[in-house]
Image (cartoon, rainbow, N blue to C red; front, top):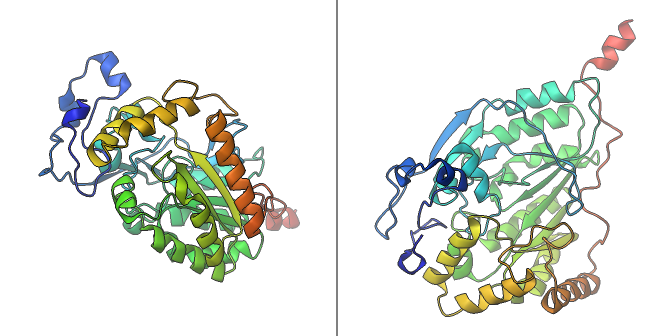
Length: 358
């Protein structure tokens, strides 16, 4: 991608559809992305393709995240956050991490059925399942498809704990299920807010709910008795880092009681997409922002190592951690680990009745 020629597309995070790393290896041309040329007059439409997934629960052993199981009802995300670390995953589907990621969405139509089957297996061990670990479960596609809601219905039926991370106000639609689960200690939600600067938010996360709308979502979730927290994420040096304390304060007033933060991550193709966004939207800050990210990442654009990939290293990273810790203590946030829900209630529907029969 020629960063100097990058042009913003209204309502989209990426301005181009660069090839994924696997397409380069196979020598597939740019025509793989069909008619998605860059340009201010180009308005790519969103297409949603329903697919039959082969499995639904993903597992990880990362020490950096507080869960071992997750479900992603969708592949790709129309929110279009330019910094999204999940963008490179679209390359596995022969699609671009650029515009394809936010315009060509795959919905896992059979997610609920697969989940029911997996939870019913004799050897299944109940541990919290996270929704939103890769792409947002409440992106616009969910309004019509309802895949996330059907997944929640299965989890509720099995009395299975769930933790959700989202930027979407659509989660309010499911307050009925989440409220019922919360009363049994089974549900927790974190809402991600990175900046209250309207211009930054509108271009950085073009189709996500506005930051002040997310505060209202926190307020409504908390009002329904659902444990809710806030993620000040991602922290981007010299762009939104000054908003950390304000975000924590306003989220607390809205009802959030847990908090976390994540430093911006730029793996694989994301680093070039992010550079293009900086050149298009904040050209005078671009070099300074990337320079500070490089210092935080040991002289690179990205540091994939466990223990530092979420928070960075060096003096600036230490200052961020100190600011966050001081603000949380001053405001009164619960410092216990997130996503600690009750697993003792888990049961396979109908199993008790079958055992009683015998």
